[in-house]
Image 1 (cartoon, rainbow, N blue to C red):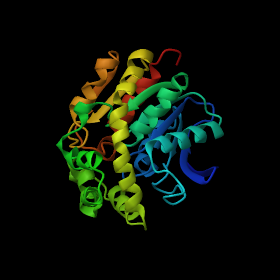
Image 2: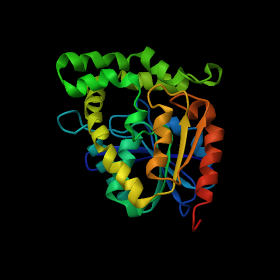
Image 3: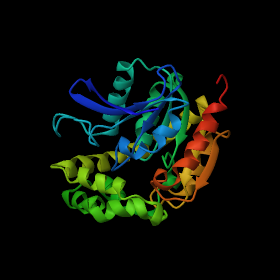
Image 4: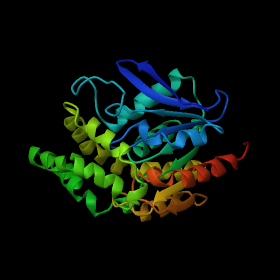
Length: 286
């Protein structure tokens, strides 16, 4: 099945999104992370499309989605969730499974907490919701959260260099299986004018995600959504204990690891797709 590339106006945001699969198939929403876009799902979508209606938007501040500049749009995770919710409403989608990765996790979990009746299942691929998942590499950001000074904000810019972006992709993954297309596109996106300030706004606002961990964990305990956790075990940003922790609040969670780093889809897409298809295919009422 071919992938289509569309845009949809949501107030003053023009959402770019990829879509594939039959219109009447179960919906699977794919939410990307930093610093990428729906492009990260380019290899996954064709594998899932025979089974699901797959929808992958670019979040505001990322990829091909067009949003107002800082000062006219609030680049926070609350705002991302509001836009995605309105996007789904505009598409008249009221039941869906969510694939959450990196920044897609706080976005998707906000949706699940606000509308638990709409979420049929959650797939977390290195999408963190636990303190134990945050490794030592978060120390720089934590300092900025605790003291949001210009000096601490500027110190975080080192994480947006081309070298840092390449490292996010290559660390913990087989370099011979890693196409440069993904990280080179992300490097280009990050180099756009004023993008650094937008991303630093998200860095500061990430503290609200950590503060929300208890609420998201309570949601998992109360609603027990079907949960598949597939983790790149060599991820230095979101550590394996963060994957295992999901079982604490959702004991029926399926937790597994693949031999990859943060961007596990880049080198383990077939393995992850198989897990997703089997997991969603075995849900009650499927």
